[in-house]
Image (cartoon, rainbow, N blue to C red; front, side, top):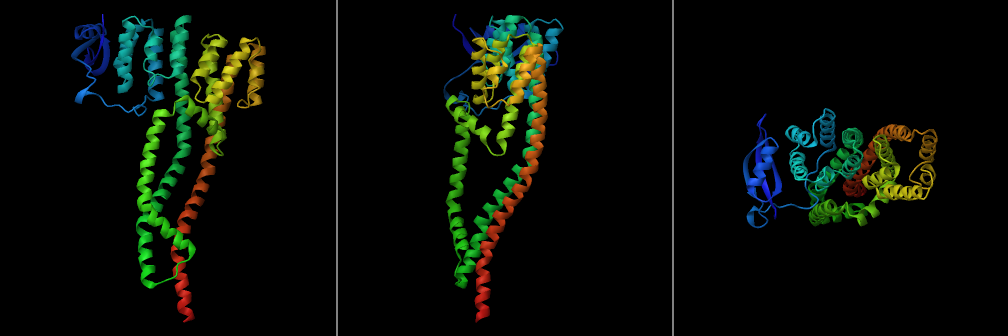
Length: 410
């Protein structure tokens, strides 16, 4: 029997909170039946229109994502319910009712319907690749085979919680430089559009001979009238293009190595990548995932193609019989300390704990690097702001000095 996609609105029996989402089913009655089985009261069911004014307009890559904090809360709630003995379907229904993030709630409602229809939990999650990251999907897939779903969801929750904390540290380090850069850009635009033309008219009325810096500044002011809208259009266009193509393999293979070679941010990005790799691998091993399967998942979930390629090479080497630490030392992305600690972990049979220790170490390194980043960029931004604004002021006043000298000679 053919199925069709329907939109629905329902309320929970207990709290009466509203839930909206989409579901594939043979008929509206089948959708209502599934909703009632989930403990929901259907209010409206309508087929999704793909044409006309009712078509939902989406720009690929620009849909709002689900924050790691919301994913961490979802994984923690689900693991707690599963540990309490609830079946997966019932646990998902409870989590749907408790989820506050609209997009995550809609995705989970669809996941619940897919699982109820016979799909695997990992397969249902994989349908929403913009909501559930590869690490979660692959961890669920492996845990389904091993029968430790609750433990793996708890590990996923810990990983996303650490990710939230890391992002907050980096964001805090970048707040002041971004604000200063924004103030500098606004100040330059205001001077170019409003201040420089006033001085230009004054110099023209006085018949003053303009020095080279002043002429350059006036030419730049004339160009700003058309250059600024062009830059805005290019910026918006580049942002849309980047949002749509930043996950393309060809783009990532060009940009990811560059992220690691940036003068100031490169070392920070490298430490973040190593910390994420160590944390994810420790989580997988602690959850009972075999080493080769764990490396496959960690490689797929890596946020940098350089790290992903290195992990794939390590996995291939281990498949040929080598140890984990030996090929790890062959890749410059991993410092020698990582390979040495991995070797100690292999010898002592505590590789998962050792990788967790590596994650702890690089988390502290990231925190220190973030503090140093803020301390290094703040004076640099002040110097740049002073040079740009000060240079413009000096260029504007140079003709006045020349006029004053000319009047004195007369």
